[in-house]
Structure formats: structure tokens, C-alpha cells
Image (tube, rainbow, N blue to C red):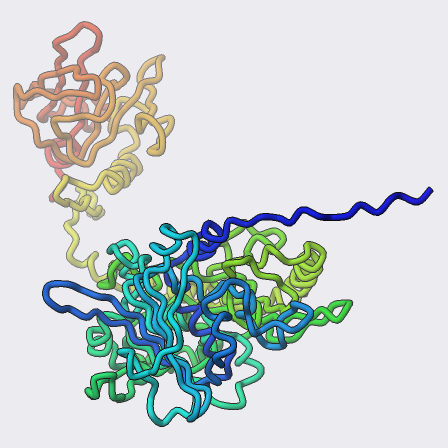
Length: 623
């Protein structure tokens, strides 16, 4: 039985004003305004693109201008709605698919310009066709009328902007007071340091395809952001930045000579350095006193990878050392404090790892595609890109998540297959091996140097001479008293020379937990706490301590000592006591004893054995 064909008669209604406003707002980063502008320039075959951000101050008011112009083909009058209209792109064919090599094809990109006070354009298609147009207060127009309108065609003399006279064709857009940059929370992005970094990483001028296929004609971006002069004065030599910025002189719109920075099309990949000679030579060239392996840089994969159904992608992997990244990525955070404003700085985890690209332009981090990884921020030593023209971008071009899931899975599987190859694993590990090797060698060298220094220091160390002529080293004294570990060594040496000196036997010594010594005196084990210098505050409870052993004491007779519980004892010093020893030679010798007398019945009295006194008064040693 054949089903009846149902006629479709109800057309979908669209709130045009609301949709326009949503498209204007649909960008997750204000600085994407430059990404869209630069892409439009390159899509129109421009070889020179200029970007000038400046503030005009008049009568106490400030106006912010973003001026972007190029020598591309220009926009024909009949295509004006492809700039001002929605989804009216000239970069798609009759089948509504993008023309070859075009990225800005959705007809949404220029709408980011309209979240501003005013947009002016000039287009020169030929010497005979040059025109301008203006869009005023687009957001206000949408709010008031549900749509916006732009001007009729204008003579260029009616506008405040103009294209260079020598350009046979080109396009100029001026965006006045873009709403995105009204506050300090976003205006920092217009700083020249930030803009140049963004341009070379997130826009068409950061295109990775130049690594295997340089453009036929040199394509250049001339850029000048806010605080340009400060940047120009600061970055002048290889000690600070590599590659060195290239500055050119131009005549601005007021016929004044000014400087602007010139950037070439293409993502920056550092010179390869993966031998000790090349790394050391580079470190010497830039005058840095850093570990040379921090300048490591190696391309470990750069190839077109073919899948089925004519799907292919370009896979590029570099591994780079800590300093290598920071030579060209000057806004990358450092271990040490930086003079650069924190608002401009990004981290290794935010910037490095695996990136998905379309048309050679980095779109989003995809560290989570890598099997066995821990997600974003894991691969900070990796500088890698997966570039596939079959990726489909979201409306704001901030993600490849519109791509058919089957294509994504095939690309991911192939990427992981390549990464799991033994040769690639070995190359990826090479940077780490250099670092570990040099750290080991440095440790060996440091040990040798420390040995020399410590041997030299022993000649100046104070010694203790026993009656039999043996010499022991006195513990080192610092601001907090005598060294406790060296006091323990001295105690062990004394017992080795005089096994029966003390009327107890040491059963255990442990400094990692609890009280230091367990001794046996009579039938019961007891605790003994070791100190380099006995002081008025004890970091254990008196309840468990039977004795203290120290090298010296800083407490006087009748002074109070407290423990961690706040329990108090009073020191009693007896200058003519009799020494108790298992060794008859030393038993009953007169010496100075130290007893801690409690003021509470919950603790017993405790003896302090002061080794310095035992040495001089009992053993007759010479200090």
C-alpha cells in the first residue's frame, strides 16, 4: 500500500533581529575579530595585510579604532551583502560547499565586527571601481527595529579612511569602539605583544602548511597594537627573543612616518637542535646561562597521512625544550618571576600539545584524542598539529566538533597508530633522555665539586682529641645550635672508643619517627631524645622521655623548659656530681650533671647528658 504524499505548506518563522544579535555575539574570544579579518584578506588573495590598533583622544574622550586593510581583490558592489548580510558568503559554490582553499565561507565571520559603534568599509576592485559604505550602531538598530541597515554606496572622500594609492585593488575595514574591548578585562588583548602572538598562533598567519609547502608569493602581515613602542624598545636582540622582530617604516593615514612590525605567513617552528654541540652553540650565541638541553628542538614527524575515501590529514610533531619554547613564545610563563603583565601570559598546558587544524589554521587543543594520555595539558613538550580539510567547524570556528564522528574516529585511530610506532616513541623520548643524562652528569660533577669543597672545609673544622690521641670532629654550629646528626655521629664514635662509658645499652636509633633512641637500663626499655643543643622548648612530650643527650646546652640553673603539651620542668645543675659508668676507669669521676625536675606528678625527673662536659670532665679530652 502506497502512503499518501503529505504536502508541506507551513514555512518556519525566524526572529531575524534575535538571530542577528546571537550571531554577532557568538564568539568565545573578543580577539577573534582579528582572526576573521585576516582570513577574509587571505581568502581574497591578499599578499599584504595591515592591522593598526590605535586610540584617538579628543576633548577628553577616547575612541578605539581597529583598522585592517589589504591588497586583495576587493569586494564588488553586487556582493556587498556578503559583508553586511548573514550567510551570504561569496566563498561557496552552487552546491553550498566551500570553494577550494576557503575557510571564511559560513557568512558569519564579519558579524563579529558589528558588535561596535560603527563600521566603515572601502573596496577597490579596479581603478574604475572604488566605493565605501557605513554601518552605524548595529546593535542599537537591532534593539530598536529588529534588524539593521547600512548606508548607500559612498564616495571614498566622504570617509575618514583610504587605501594606499599604489594598490590596484584592496579592501579596508575600520571598526570604531568595538564593545568587546570596553574594559581592562579585555583591552589587554590589544597590546602589541598579545596581538602578534595571537596572529601567529590562532589566525591564518599561523598556518602550519608553510612547513611543507611555502606560499608561491610572500604573504606578509604588518601589525601595530597598543604599547607598540614599548615592545619595540624592549625586544632588540637575540638574548630576549628569537626570531628577532622585523620593523619597517611606513607612512600612516596622517602622512606621518611610523614603524610597524612585519610578520610572515606561517607558524613558527624553531631551528632544529638535538645534539650537544648545536644546543651548546646556540646557548652561547644567545648569551644564556641555562642548561643547554633546554634549547632542544627536533621535528620528529611531518607528513601527509592518507585514509580511505580520499580523506587525508597533515600530521606534524616537534618536541621542544623549556627555553626553546620561550625564545619565540615570549608570553609563555616562566619558573622565575616575569616582568610581563600576568594578564598577557599563558601556560605551557594552555598552548602546547596536540592541535586540530583546518586549512592549516590551529582551531582547538585535542590532547584528549591521544590514548593513554591524561587530557589537556599533558603534552607540554610536544608542539603538534593534525590538519584535515574534512574537519567541519562550528559557527564561531572555535571547534572541529561539527565533523562527522566517523571521520574524527578514523583520524584519531591513525594518529595513535603513528604515535605508538617504536621509532616515533624513541624520538619523542630523546629530549627527555638528554635532560636525564645531563642531570646525571651534572650530579656527578656536583658530587666531585662538593667532595673537593668538603675536604677543604675539614681542614678548618674543630677537632676533639681523646687521651689516646684519636681525633674526632666537633659537630658544626649554626644559628639554631649544634648539628643534631653530627652529634649522633659523635655519640656513636665515643661508644666505639669507650663501649662501657654509659650505664645503658642503645637498642635502636630512628630519626624518622618519634623519639630518637631506645635504650636498655636495667630490665626495662626507655626512650632517649637526641639534640644538638638543648634549648627551652622541646618538640616531644616529657611523659615518654627518660633522658636527653646533647652536645651542648643553652639553659641556666632554675630556668624552665616546656614540652609540646605545655608541661614544665626546671633545670637543676650540680657542679660536683659523680659520674655513673659501666667502666670502672670513669665511674664516680666528678663532673657537672643536669637534671630536669618536674612540677607535676604525671612525669618523672630526666637527666640531660651533655657530651661536651663528658668529654672534658670525664674523659679529659681536649677541645
